[in-house]
Length: 172
Image (tube, rainbow, N blue to C red; front, side):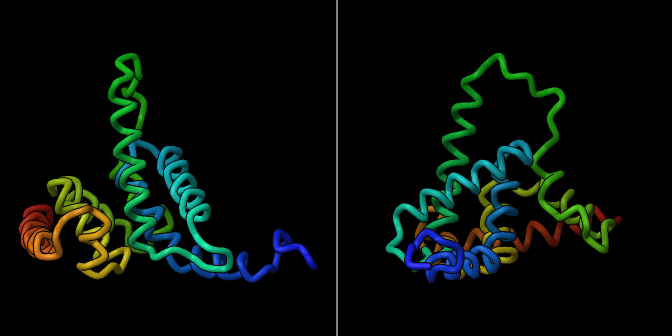
Protein backbone atom coordinates (compact mmCIF):
# COMPACT_ATOMS: atom_id res chain seq x y z
CA UNK A 1 0.00 0.00 0.00
CA UNK A 2 2.90 2.34 -0.51
CA UNK A 3 1.96 3.12 -4.11
CA UNK A 4 -0.38 6.04 -4.83
CA UNK A 5 -1.81 4.07 -7.75
CA UNK A 6 -3.32 1.30 -5.63
CA UNK A 7 -7.02 1.24 -4.86
CA UNK A 8 -7.92 3.13 -1.75
CA UNK A 9 -5.41 5.95 -2.20
CA UNK A 10 -6.52 9.44 -1.14
CA UNK A 11 -6.79 10.45 -4.80
CA UNK A 12 -9.02 7.44 -5.59
CA UNK A 13 -11.26 8.24 -2.62
CA UNK A 14 -11.63 11.93 -3.57
CA UNK A 15 -12.40 11.13 -7.20
CA UNK A 16 -14.79 8.28 -6.36
CA UNK A 17 -16.79 10.52 -4.01
CA UNK A 18 -16.75 13.37 -6.54
CA UNK A 19 -17.88 11.08 -9.37
CA UNK A 20 -20.63 9.55 -7.25
CA UNK A 21 -21.96 13.02 -6.48
CA UNK A 22 -21.65 14.60 -9.94
CA UNK A 23 -21.58 11.63 -12.32
CA UNK A 24 -25.32 11.33 -12.95
CA UNK A 25 -25.71 15.02 -13.82
CA UNK A 26 -22.62 14.91 -16.04
CA UNK A 27 -23.96 11.87 -17.89
CA UNK A 28 -27.36 13.53 -18.31
CA UNK A 29 -25.66 16.57 -19.81
CA UNK A 30 -23.50 14.36 -22.04
CA UNK A 31 -26.61 12.53 -23.28
CA UNK A 32 -28.20 15.84 -24.12
CA UNK A 33 -25.13 17.02 -26.00
CA UNK A 34 -24.62 13.86 -28.04
CA UNK A 35 -26.34 11.76 -30.64
CA UNK A 36 -26.19 8.37 -28.94
CA UNK A 37 -25.65 6.72 -25.57
CA UNK A 38 -22.22 5.47 -26.67
CA UNK A 39 -21.18 8.99 -27.71
CA UNK A 40 -22.43 10.37 -24.37
CA UNK A 41 -20.37 7.84 -22.43
CA UNK A 42 -17.30 8.51 -24.59
CA UNK A 43 -17.65 12.26 -24.10
CA UNK A 44 -17.96 11.86 -20.37
CA UNK A 45 -14.93 9.60 -20.22
CA UNK A 46 -12.86 12.02 -22.32
CA UNK A 47 -13.89 14.94 -20.10
CA UNK A 48 -13.06 13.00 -16.94
CA UNK A 49 -9.62 11.98 -18.23
CA UNK A 50 -8.85 15.55 -19.26
CA UNK A 51 -10.02 16.83 -15.87
CA UNK A 52 -7.98 14.22 -14.02
CA UNK A 53 -4.83 15.13 -15.98
CA UNK A 54 -5.23 18.81 -15.15
CA UNK A 55 -5.84 18.40 -11.40
CA UNK A 56 -3.26 18.20 -8.63
CA UNK A 57 -3.08 14.79 -6.92
CA UNK A 58 -5.80 13.99 -4.36
CA UNK A 59 -8.15 16.74 -5.56
CA UNK A 60 -11.14 16.85 -7.85
CA UNK A 61 -12.00 19.65 -10.29
CA UNK A 62 -14.77 22.21 -9.93
CA UNK A 63 -17.82 20.62 -11.56
CA UNK A 64 -18.39 23.65 -13.80
CA UNK A 65 -14.98 23.06 -15.40
CA UNK A 66 -15.91 19.46 -16.23
CA UNK A 67 -19.24 20.60 -17.70
CA UNK A 68 -17.33 23.11 -19.84
CA UNK A 69 -14.86 20.45 -21.03
CA UNK A 70 -17.78 18.14 -21.77
CA UNK A 71 -19.58 20.84 -23.71
CA UNK A 72 -16.51 21.71 -25.79
CA UNK A 73 -15.80 18.04 -26.51
CA UNK A 74 -19.43 17.58 -27.61
CA UNK A 75 -19.24 20.58 -29.94
CA UNK A 76 -15.99 19.30 -31.45
CA UNK A 77 -17.43 15.81 -31.91
CA UNK A 78 -20.62 17.14 -33.53
CA UNK A 79 -18.63 19.28 -35.94
CA UNK A 80 -16.40 16.34 -36.82
CA UNK A 81 -19.38 14.02 -37.29
CA UNK A 82 -21.26 16.56 -39.39
CA UNK A 83 -18.29 16.78 -41.76
CA UNK A 84 -18.62 13.06 -42.38
CA UNK A 85 -21.21 13.17 -45.14
CA UNK A 86 -21.26 9.39 -45.40
CA UNK A 87 -22.41 8.82 -41.85
CA UNK A 88 -25.62 6.85 -41.74
CA UNK A 89 -28.10 8.43 -39.31
CA UNK A 90 -31.29 6.57 -40.07
CA UNK A 91 -30.90 3.87 -37.41
CA UNK A 92 -29.75 6.09 -34.58
CA UNK A 93 -31.86 7.23 -31.69
CA UNK A 94 -32.20 10.90 -30.84
CA UNK A 95 -30.50 12.45 -27.80
CA UNK A 96 -33.86 13.08 -26.12
CA UNK A 97 -34.33 9.34 -25.74
CA UNK A 98 -31.33 9.24 -23.41
CA UNK A 99 -31.99 12.17 -21.11
CA UNK A 100 -33.71 10.25 -18.39
CA UNK A 101 -32.81 7.00 -16.71
CA UNK A 102 -34.77 4.09 -18.13
CA UNK A 103 -35.64 3.02 -14.58
CA UNK A 104 -37.59 6.17 -13.76
CA UNK A 105 -40.68 5.50 -11.64
CA UNK A 106 -42.94 7.91 -13.39
CA UNK A 107 -42.30 7.23 -17.09
CA UNK A 108 -45.32 9.16 -18.31
CA UNK A 109 -44.17 12.35 -16.58
CA UNK A 110 -40.64 11.81 -17.86
CA UNK A 111 -41.89 11.40 -21.42
CA UNK A 112 -43.87 14.64 -21.18
CA UNK A 113 -40.82 16.47 -19.87
CA UNK A 114 -38.65 14.92 -22.59
CA UNK A 115 -41.10 16.04 -25.25
CA UNK A 116 -41.16 19.58 -23.90
CA UNK A 117 -37.36 19.65 -23.51
CA UNK A 118 -36.83 18.66 -27.16
CA UNK A 119 -38.86 21.69 -28.19
CA UNK A 120 -36.74 24.15 -26.21
CA UNK A 121 -34.04 26.06 -28.08
CA UNK A 122 -30.61 24.54 -27.38
CA UNK A 123 -29.39 27.53 -25.36
CA UNK A 124 -32.37 27.28 -23.02
CA UNK A 125 -32.26 23.49 -22.73
CA UNK A 126 -28.56 23.62 -21.88
CA UNK A 127 -28.99 26.19 -19.09
CA UNK A 128 -32.06 24.46 -17.70
CA UNK A 129 -30.26 21.12 -17.52
CA UNK A 130 -27.21 22.63 -15.84
CA UNK A 131 -29.33 24.47 -13.28
CA UNK A 132 -32.00 21.92 -12.41
CA UNK A 133 -30.38 18.54 -12.95
CA UNK A 134 -26.72 19.42 -12.39
CA UNK A 135 -27.40 21.89 -9.59
CA UNK A 136 -24.94 24.50 -10.86
CA UNK A 137 -25.21 28.11 -9.80
CA UNK A 138 -25.87 30.73 -12.44
CA UNK A 139 -22.22 31.83 -12.12
CA UNK A 140 -21.05 28.27 -12.75
CA UNK A 141 -23.43 27.98 -15.69
CA UNK A 142 -22.10 31.23 -17.12
CA UNK A 143 -18.56 29.91 -16.81
CA UNK A 144 -19.53 26.56 -18.34
CA UNK A 145 -21.25 27.96 -21.43
CA UNK A 146 -18.99 31.02 -21.78
CA UNK A 147 -21.51 33.81 -21.30
CA UNK A 148 -21.84 36.61 -18.74
CA UNK A 149 -23.76 35.70 -15.55
CA UNK A 150 -26.64 38.03 -16.47
CA UNK A 151 -27.03 36.24 -19.80
CA UNK A 152 -27.09 32.87 -18.03
CA UNK A 153 -29.74 34.20 -15.65
CA UNK A 154 -31.84 35.55 -18.53
CA UNK A 155 -31.60 32.28 -20.44
CA UNK A 156 -32.67 30.39 -17.33
CA UNK A 157 -35.66 32.69 -16.81
CA UNK A 158 -36.69 32.41 -20.47
CA UNK A 159 -36.18 28.63 -20.35
CA UNK A 160 -38.52 28.33 -17.37
CA UNK A 161 -41.17 30.45 -19.09
CA UNK A 162 -40.88 28.50 -22.31
CA UNK A 163 -40.90 25.16 -20.49
CA UNK A 164 -44.07 26.11 -18.60
CA UNK A 165 -45.73 27.05 -21.88
CA UNK A 166 -44.59 23.83 -23.56
CA UNK A 167 -45.67 21.65 -20.64
CA UNK A 168 -49.10 23.24 -20.76
CA UNK A 169 -49.33 22.44 -24.49
CA UNK A 170 -47.99 18.89 -24.06
CA UNK A 171 -50.39 18.11 -21.20
CA UNK A 172 -53.47 19.20 -23.14
